[in-house]
Length: 550
Image (cartoon, rainbow, N blue to C red):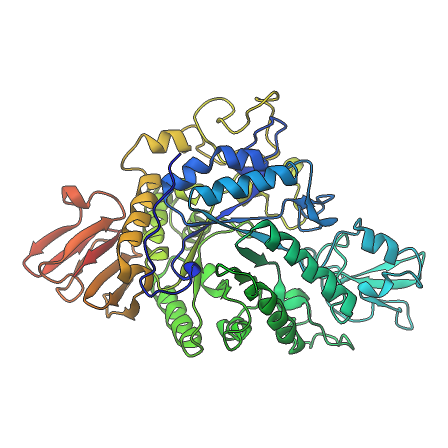
């Protein structure tokens, strides 16, 4: 392995503004001990792939001790590694090697809730007078014995966000699964304990945190009903309480007390950009917050234009830095979403199959050329679809198994995913479709594959300051086309994306005479698929995206 060279920041700002993050879901990345579940040693063994790809930072989804009711987001010990993933020594080895290779590492932090098997909750449930009773949110039943309010849990819209605890005669709050009781951040002891968790990992050398549903750590003390227009929506998507900002400022202050620009990335699961933007504060809350409206945008130029305009206007007015993401562990992969949407609109299956990867390739160009910090989800560089999960194979309480399928590394029977003494054992979930041909080894050998497209995009982004840090201007385009102008000093790039199924003629404004084609998403630009028809005209293929220097 070779350490990748870090380009200097185009603006001299913190590293995370220009980094490309790669989300690792440890259960599904690589299995080093052959037990069918991915682990930290598996990640360590595959770091070379990430260095070769050209990402700058890794985000590790939870690897803490957990009963796995929510596959690690139900934490039973925040300061230890679950044995299924390894141990603290394995984590330290992974962190050390990643840093040696020039990769930053952030980890998930789950501040809103714990597992119901956490020692804190076991004590809290033992008696109304226990030491940790008030660390969680308990309430008496209303007169008819029903839950204290009408809040709905995230994974089951027919279920309340409360579970009745018979031994102590009270309901406890859980915005997610009943096995994930909510902590009460009104209690100073809870705040101290969770700050100590952050310090534990910061002292080990992590570069920051992705904070799970960070906006939920504040709640109105009287826990009022959700109003009728939104009653029935999971309360986690509605919880927006002023005191939360004070708590995040204290967290940010702690993180900022460490050197080397440690970063706080907030999962603020609210459905408007304006609500999300408020959690940047005055530059004193989160450094970055996931931009969910863009995550849910379909493959449509008008919808993306609207999302970009709103993000630029809302965050720009605050001096906040955007994030962009197409897929993650909580949502169907974007290639799957785009295909389903196309079929829903009446596109036939053969056309969908023909256009499927083209859309994914063009989306990669869009993601990696927007102003802000991009997050890749493991396997999108392979163009993966969600796995087909039969009912008897389903495991996740939120029905998210399909996007969490194991990565296929080669075309062998076990796809090179498991090594070690138990190699060959079936993985914890089935592989995604096309794994025989859509695996890392096969795509690595094909210079025109989507994998090489991602690598070239990352290399071009790294070498082009205007793409990393330049201003963004949306340009006028024909219907179904999106175009960006990225500029920094004398450097100018145009990015043009066709979201339609027809070839489009572009004007000389979008493709100026003398501009140079850096990237064509179908990788056929070099052989004429994206071709000039005159000195000032340019033909852009269906579902094709290009990057030009102007």
